[in-house]
Every structure is written in structure tokens, then in C-alpha cells.
Length: 105
Image (cartoon, rainbow, N blue to C red; front, top):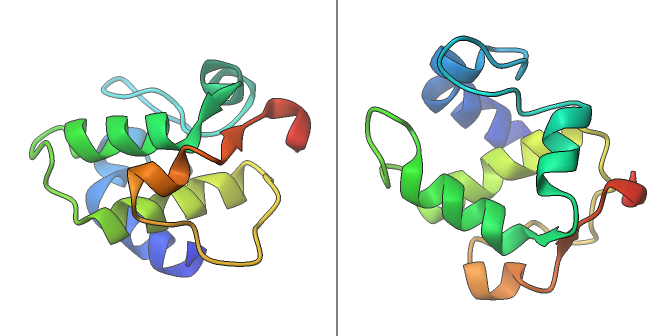
């Protein structure tokens, strides 16, 4: 899933967030301490819904739910978050049970 997410990220996200997820003038970093602190103790549903509704910036809500889940799987992998036994769901309701926890790294 993270492999698919990397391809989708490069296509839809890298223009603003840069290929290395380091962010730039147009968008914040999607890796590192600031990113992890920003989303710490929130559910994956919050990150999924925000991404789904507002990205890409030039086409909000332009990603298919599976693309969003794949991109988030890639972002989590880059941030060295532990992977699950199954793919990250593409359903916000199912994602509410998954917490973004900095301590989980």
C-alpha cells in the first residue's frame, strides 16, 4: 500500500510538499517532529478527512478515497510509524479506531 501511496504522492502531492515530504513555500512538511506533533493524539480519520477534503490544493477533494489511504500509508511509513497487519482502510469511520500517536514510533 505504501508503494502505491508513494506513486500517488509524487503525482498529486510532491509539487507542493516536495518529493522528500519536507514541505516548502506552499505546504508544510509531512514528515518529522513538527508533523508528528501536529497530529499527535488524533485519529487517523481526522488526517484522512482533512487530506481527502482539501487536497490536492489545486483540486480539493480530487483524490479517490483509496488514493488518500495509500498516500497516508506512505506518509506513515516515511515517519517510521509501525505498519498494521492489514492495509490502512479508505473509510473515515474505520480510521477512527486508529490513533496517531507519536509515542507509537
